[in-house]
Length: 114
Length: 394
Image 1 (cartoon, each protein chain N blue to C red):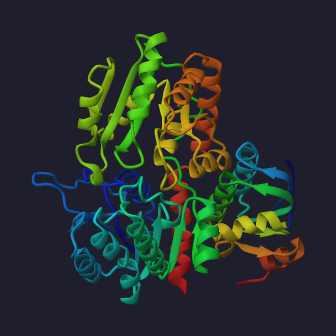
Image 2 (image 1 turned 60 degrees about the horizontal axis):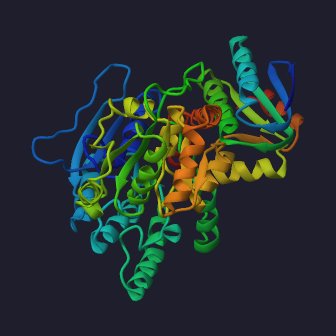
């Protein structure tokens, strides 16, 4: 899996490509942790290139979501591919996360006061 | 939120007691989400009682024994207990035979989630198996073809009642598919089983010391039968005379006296240990000594907690070629040696492929450790809490 990370304003963004499974989780978990430790609690994970996601990977995102919300932030997702969307629907985690079709929509949502 | 959990729980020995124990163990740490847990548990034999650790950083918990395996009045007693405790949400940790081995109490018990929902309380069911995939004969509910047909019909009807709960969680993707396609359910979701043990930083796999130790663990007599394993063990003794077979666990409540019968039938076979009930403290010891954990199943009624346990302890496993288990192995990243169900020679060969080949044993052990510890049950509990909060916000 390839991961590219960047920061846009107060939002930490990771774009993932390839297979997101137990073997790839440590890298994503480390990025989530370092972002949160840097005070970034608005996180966006762009899954545009992810063609497979397993329960361990899902769990790492749930864990990231939980920590962001505990600190007053959130973890948004965008650009889910069809196989990944199916897994989110199967687990009904699509109800737990806020999911956007494109990155820009998520950034606008972060910048819009609730 | 205040949560009622209808479950079995140690020292109760009913099925799913271990899952109940570990789920609750981690749910108690979620003090930011949960204010109180009330376990609606089965009554214990005289002299036994439920006990809990009390600590300020744990959610307060109490147990309210209010049902009995095979009692026909569980439905009234559990509803009364739910009304009395006034929870925000009720979770059922159940499978199809949770409330009885007799058909009437088993069926009546499965109507309880629907009735709880009718009473106005948000209801979630964690359903560990579904009727559509159970081999009724081998699960101890068989009899004549007419009887099996009747049970299937009532199973179909009861499944609809279970699906009347607000949410139904299952641990195998195929179950979601069946419930959505056959029952047109829209409230089912997949939740990982989760690992019971805390993961270590290093993968703790090694060949245990001592002679080859073959373990089977569970509640035996219905679809978990040890005869073929004992016969395979007899064959193994020819080349490994110091090998040991540990049959850990008790009779399935549906088949009392089963293990005593096996012990008598195979009294001529040496090096077999029947442990009886295994306490929580002894579980790591039993698994830690095992070279191979064998699943002598003739059918399966759901995701195997024993497989997750074996993986959590970094053990190699020997599995039958049965739909659910093989699917689980593949989908969740487990590995093992496989045998043809009810074939002692095939089972012997599979065990030998583990105990005679340490590299293969360690390869399987490592993969199973990673698979089992991929999603610790503490994270699975978080998934449920997201679903509960979502339900309560509606």
